[in-house]
Length: 415
Image (cartoon, rainbow, N blue to C red; front, side, top):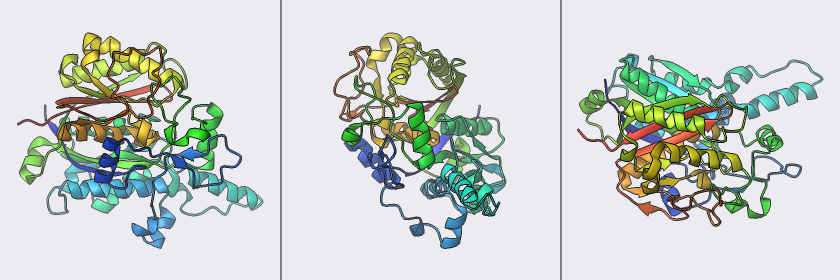
């Protein structure tokens, strides 16, 4: 089986607009939550979110490009380009027929869609839609933009599985390289759903925190007082390639991607299986794919959205899969800092796992003051402060509405 390694990382997040700033803030336990600036929240239950800070699209794109690019696609191009440069790629270093793009977004251009419909209704239902409406909004267009930017003619598509979308993208790219259908992929995901439609929609589901008085600490995975997730935005790009391809390029290798798991809850539209059966199965599948024992895992970056049901079901699943070894794991929920980047969550949290392997540091679960009494207190949830640990194997979980479950496993690279 062809081995697959990670050679490039890029990110634009609520904690920083590049990889280094993101990682520094993650280790320092910085909250990315603040008041929403994208629209007037006066009539909304939730008035805070994890927005990307200090972002001006004109710093990255010209006026004509901005007209064509929904913010979710802008974030894709920015994060992917940092990863592309980080991997030492240029047009002369690789065969573009053997390079592909698989990029995820859970929702795509929701604000573009809402504004076009609003204009249609205000214009007396006269259909004067922008010619960029459809190609700006659709969830596959970021992958299309990336292929055109770099001339990649290999496999190209988007994955959509709600909040599991970008881990699905990473696993698909991983499998296509293993099947010798390509040598290199730009993969990852991006999301830009902090909009009236996005926040209003999640509010109506009662999935989001409404703790406006404590907005900085509102994302509280595992805490007894958690009341839902904090929505985030941004993008994360990862370059993965076949090992010999990377060796020939002489590029630095961050980690090896050794396994991916997929499963479904087959239970409920939005609620997780209460006993974590889908989560148990997906981690089991990932371990089987990686051909490692549970005892070899050092760190799990959990889905950990801070919803009352989701956190409990995931913890139950971890205890079922890892048994007594669960007490030797570091577990952390970095959504406590980044918020929930929806379709981009899996990619940004995979990067957190990869960086933990590189630096030997586990980023914390912040805002954890009063542990939910239903959660085993003997588990190491990396509460409130980063911990040093030599991480040989790290696992990233992401789950999505509809019962989609994904797990990716990364290992310290060894020849």
